[in-house]
Image 1 (spheres, rainbow, N blue to C red):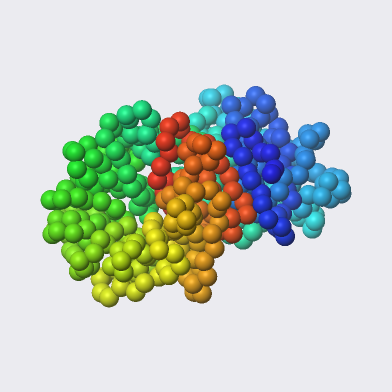
Image 2: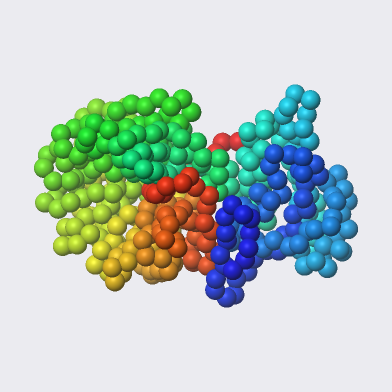
Length: 408
């Protein structure tokens, strides 16, 4: 167990972990800043599972300094981040940083951001994205957003938060349940199911404006929306013609087109990143299992074979992985399958996991669970070795969905 910041905790388990040792010197001026930039960057990087923080105490450096790299080699750091934050006359903040490769003695560049106070956390996440991409070659996901639902008392709220769970903003509050929030691929809209009309109906909600529109309100239940990657349509589960079946419907609404024809319950559709395939849950084999079919419909093929109850599919953006929830001995546990081989790993030791959702770089999964008697929002690496509990609003936390990369 490795202590991190007060807001959350990073757990490390397993052996043979290779993590890049990185030193983040407290940014010059951050003691007078509303946000401790270097601490946010360090927490982001450690939560990714790719980095290990190195003690950077006792050093006063900023982006203009020429650091003594021999000293940092002695401290076992492979890389070093230095910077500053300065309050400007108009109230905004100037945030600057520079990244050093300590081993090679190279300056790996830096950036600057001029932001209002409310965007200091976003600037910190973008610094983490820069460092992550420079040092791993993969795109960082720290400036992305997640959506989740809480139930507090008799009130349900839909939240949009930073990828570390902080800075949560309420998108909707209702005395009736809100379920199944899912981001559009451009990150501008959320689809979800609301029971405010005393039956499940599907809305599409513009996150920036707060305006929303009713997408599916047909006879029976309307549930489980999933955006097609092009944003032009959604797959939904409707019971308008009897049992729960899959349909597609234009994002602008209109008459849905039926995709499955079965006497079973077909639900929880999700698209592959290229839009060619829909994964979904069906009990057509006698118990809930995950199947896939062409996005235009057609004969399904079964995907999960281990266990008698597998639900909540989520497909990684790179198409390599399927995350889902499997019931094992009465417990609901997060599993990850490598789609090419069918190899499955159980990656949690909790028993009430739900709603896995991949980060847009396919390297982390966010999910909800119960931890030490409380509901919790967690992230995990795909091997389960690095887990972090995210900050979240109080109440029963449910149904997280990880949004796409943000446009800079």
